[in-house]
Image (tube, rainbow, N blue to C red; front, side, top):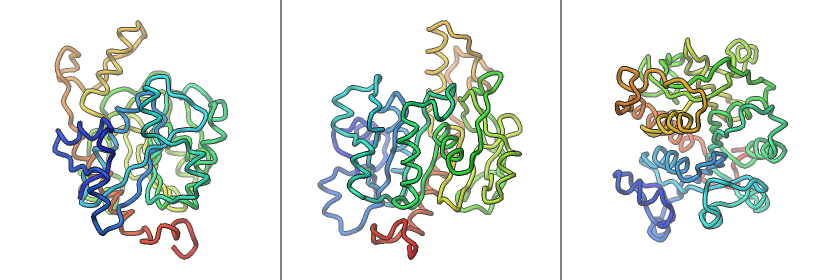
Length: 310
């Protein structure tokens, strides 16, 4: 089954050319099934790039997906055209006011790692989002800073600044092979990392209800399950395109910022060579498994999501 997208959303043409099954809204309305409603709270500056990355992954499952794009209410995007934001995004305050519910919600990262959580201008509203998920979302997926923020909100686990940026592709170990979220995963895999902060394993271990599913000897915990809040947190970037790390590296080099070559990314660590994508299959597996778990657990009646009898 395809992912349902507006035909004029940039991701529609990009994914169609890649062979991802997409369906315009009119055709989807004629199918007598209930699509899974997945929200994307997009906190990244490059909105179009990020929405395309996640649409690619959740659109590769056998289920029909209805993707809703959400933004923080008072935070304006400086890197995405106002026309795009007006046409495709709704402010969270509007979503909250309607009382609508979602089978799944992805909360992206944000370039605010250098700030304490409560120093972020939209922290108050984002905290409302986290609490709202408990009554209006079947499963929430926090990504990078979004995952760190959510695990801090619910469990008080802090993020810690690194001496230098964790930047490149790092080996990770499958710590929970029997987890349904890791179905089909190798014992060892490569995952892109780009962050100045970390969550520490010993602080996760101090919270018994949290379970680390993927971890790295070099860059620490990566994927954490929080069953009590129906949530997953991933601190790294399986959703990245082949050239996302290159774009970050080239941007910093061009602006004169000190930046190391992303490790284990370019062949021979030579930035003049074309990088190779060695994480794509696991990205599709993870998000496909997440969508499948939602499908297996979510109520058919949307109103029952977040209720005691769900």
